[in-house]
Amino acid sequence: EVQLVESGGGLVQPGRSLRLSCAASGFTFDNYAMHWVRQAPGKGLEWVSGINWSSGSIAYADSVKDRFTISRDNAKNSLYLEMNSLRSEDTAFYYCAKDEGYYIDYWGQGTLVTVSS
Amino acid sequence: QSALTQPRSVSGSPGQSVTISCTGTRSDVGAYNYVSWYQQHPGKAPKLMIYDVSKRPSGVPDRFSGSKSGNTASLTISGLQAEDEADYYCCSYAGDYTFVFGTGTKVTVL
Image 1 (cartoon, helix red, strand yellow):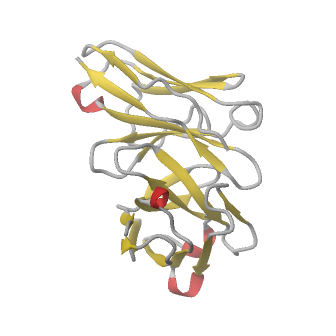
Image 2: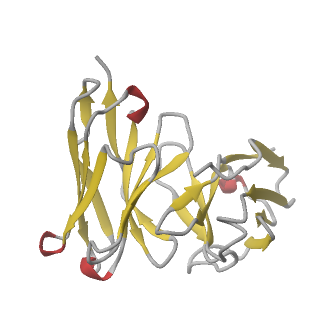
């Protein structure tokens, strides 16, 4: 059974940093691209960033480019999102998601990031 | 990277059909046959319902179907059931390893 478990969310002040982690299990992690998708409370889904199996291809939404960094450790079956210069508009549930070839087939339960002073 | 446009809400009675549109551009929906649809119940993670425009994952009822014409994709739910009441989001590959989601549609079963 595929499982994606996010961690690292919490309350952080504007301008500070936070690192999210996603522990993957139930599939061969290093065979698949992975993504981060976020959802502000009561709002829609927003694709944030994606990384291919080898970390050779990485992409970001314009809204987070130059502030967020996606990475993965295939030896640890883990995905990460380093978030810097956080803003109030970054407040959202952050979902870790598995790619199955141009679509997401599995989602984690999400971790809440709240940016507030 | 503008969000794809979906109607804010659609509704139907049990047994009826509803269709949700998802309008993008020549750079996303119109460029690739990589449109997917997700169902999200309150407080839950999204669930894949349709991928590659019209393919259904195993376990998804055949009441759900997808199509695309030009820059607009559509999700149709036939034989609407109470458990179909949820938010629905489309998503399209947009090139250079980027994706874009739709604005979301709330489906209400009357």
